[in-house]
Image 1 (cartoon, helix red, strand yellow):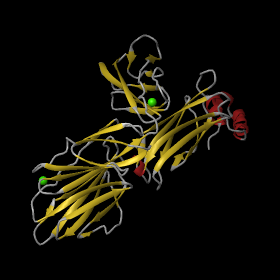
Image 2 (cartoon, protein in one colour; image 1 turned 180 degrees about the vertical axis):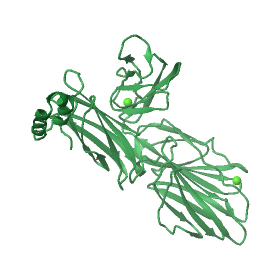
Image 3 (cartoon, rainbow, N blue to C red; image 1 turned 45 degrees about the vertical axis):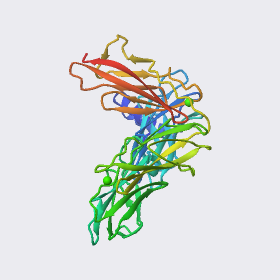
Image 4 (cartoon, protein in one colour; image 1 turned 45 degrees about the horizontal axis):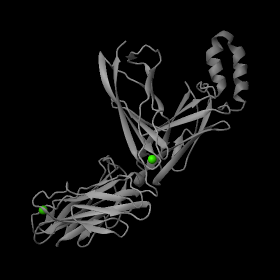
Length: 413
Ligand SMILES: [Ca+2]
Ligand SMILES: [Ca+2]
């Protein structure tokens, strides 16, 4: 454990030599330096989801004193997490900030990470862990059929976040209405590609289902016919509907690689069902529902995919994202390579709620998600003058989002 005394020794040790070592020991015995009353903390966690069993995210805390100045070096910030752990759980500020690591454990869910320093400075951020981050589930087999007399096919399930990023280390359970699966009911973990595998041996047409929590996906394995199953794809709008609001579902992107789709069947997860490529449904109560689309091709083969839809209790007006301004350290209107730039989105607002996160994509393959509208970024590796598109995406307390884009020119100064 370091203590504030070390800093003093490093700075003044050359001048005072051994005299200061006495002071160092004394300082170590004193109480931790923490943020004074009225200080504020801002917390940033990136990325906003991690897989189970050792998934890591960077947690950065920036602290300000009541007068707006950064917290002094050596201010102690402590961390807690409702799931997983933060390492180290106690860290000292340097240049006004602290960086620690969130590490997931064996439990899925939404982890709330809290940072605290002094009597009243706290900040919280959320991160999705394991199956809580799962948005969509697909299943298919290679090949899509067994020959007359029976045979074996490989079963592949693919698990992704809502924006299509594969999720590793998710347990997938496979089941079949005929034949024998190699997994025999044991969960199979997804790999780095978000894929889990099984093997089906059967001598008849068989439906194979993959499950992750409440999400399921099903595919038909044919018998003696060389047919490819159809591919279910659908979208819905609005993305974050309220109870009582009509939701429109569209499956026109679905297709059959070697035929055509004959039927579209929907299960909305609340007992409601419908048929057809374009349907609508109204949820009566708020909640997280699993929507399943099953498509049937011209040979009667089926394949189903599902996704989760979050229905809120009240109608939600989306937030408005505004990048208010970009400030530089030296106010000369030239953004320089290596210069710390401050991006300010304090002009953003939510007409009927509050903004809970600000995501900045800086256009140089880096991004951060922050609970605060003000973040810093430094562009590096610029040779001449380069243009970047900076995208701000704000999310409100009910999950609706909005984006704003600015163009920024950065030059070598
Ligand atoms: Ca087909
Ligand atoms: Ca809102």
